[in-house]
Image 1 (cartoon, one colour):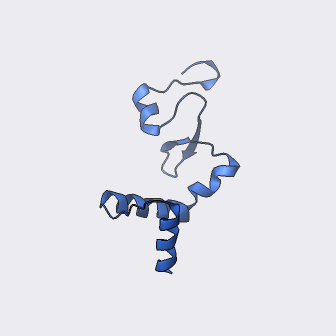
Image 2: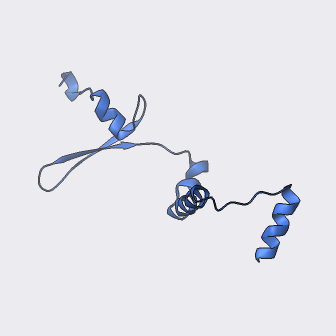
Length: 88
């Protein structure tokens, strides 16, 4: 520990927290005395929609469909929109 109660995190801890220079961290003290350290990432307000739980659920679903090969290719945008209309 340094003066002013500063500590340096070992590289493997910073990597496990997915944090780097300029990122924020959060400390919490549990009832049993354990101290929990979490890495925080600031999300610009105009991008917060992407990180909503509903949008992330859709991202996971899309990733699963892509991984399973459940995709469709179109000649152009018009063909894609026509296919979407047919699904309605």
